[in-house]
Length: 402
Image (cartoon, rainbow, N blue to C red; front, top):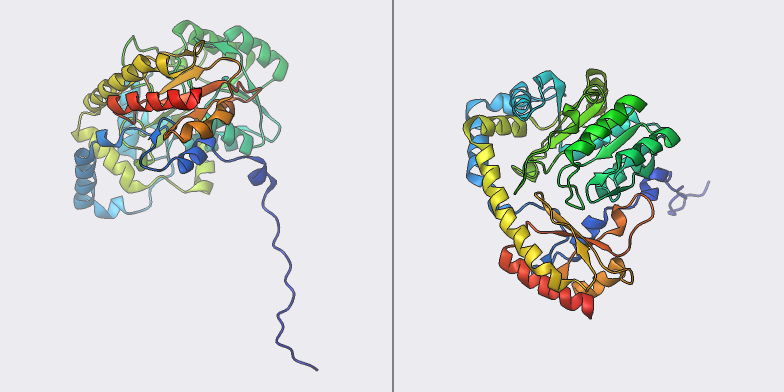
């Protein structure tokens, strides 16, 4: 028997799941990585303004919780969420026109997790999901990761077309419709009250789940609040309402929630048990303490006032920044403005040239489930001051016009 020092041959490890390679990464995250230089005026992100975080109030909430009930704050919690936080969220939802009990809610690790849980609970590979056109990018990723077939519903400046939705439901037999009806990401548009009622009627008549995502609804600058789809007749037993503290308190808390009918909510809880057991206890208790001790509505009003000034600064300068013949939205709230350049422009191809001017946007193409519109782009107006926005638009003008 001969002993050698050579290592035995090794076999390759099994491959990654096909879905991990078939689904691309986030175009927004990739652009942010490229444009992270401090000199870049970055209209690409969807980040709330960090200087507006209530650092003192949130810090006090954490200190109080850890001082008064440290063992509970640092212990495991229930999957459904801390009772105090769920009760506070139920009260806020009820005050806004949708009667809600604490047991109607499931606390999630950001509302993005809610999308993943719903995809797990509702979708089989090959099921059809209807979405807006264009659509929130991370929702497209979540549904694609679940193996769903994603179909865009035609719409216009007022949001999805209920008649087109009705026709698609008949033809495609989808499981659900996903919508961000208020200050939509990426367009900033708001679905009208009349259309919300019509969407609810389609869902009731045809048999359809509605996932109503509302991360921006409290950030209203002007106009009247439009009631949730979930509050309309026929929608109560088939609408899931998603909420989040990311845009109104702080995204680092990773606190979201879903309001859903009992059977679906239980299914999501089972899926969450498999994902992360529960959302961090200390974060939930701190948020509940903040809601008890502070005036979140007053804080949101201050934030919305600043965001309105920044939106107005972008609206004031965008006409000079974009080529002649461009169009853009005028959002009544939220964080985003959507623009379309003339047909000859491709915003993906133009982006490197624009970044050379130390400014960035997100090309519109990744936001489409169907045929993309290469002439579109998204601009976030909340992260920079009005002066920085003005300078960023001047740089954008130089980049687009060469």
